[in-house]
Length: 76
Picture 1: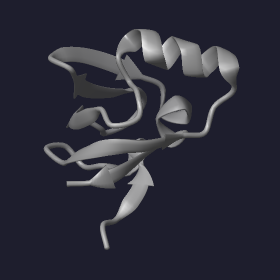
Picture 2 (picture 1 turned 60 degrees about the vertical axis):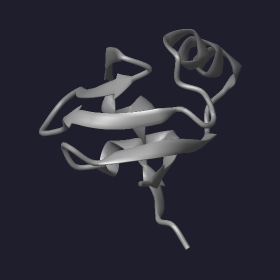
Picture 3 (picture 1 turned 180 degrees about the vertical axis):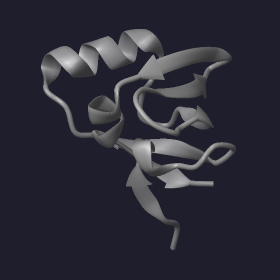
């Protein structure tokens, strides 16, 4: 059984696959526009304090910690 946790809990260098997004319609649409969809592979680049930096579909994205807590990933 694979471990599922919020994106914000990944350590730098860890990767995961998005399995669920716990967001309302507006945020869901915004994340889809950014390329974060169910099945997307996400690699954590920076996660110290404040916003996090992730790599999704060959693009670097900055996400607020609150938004990243709503994105559940299966750790690879």
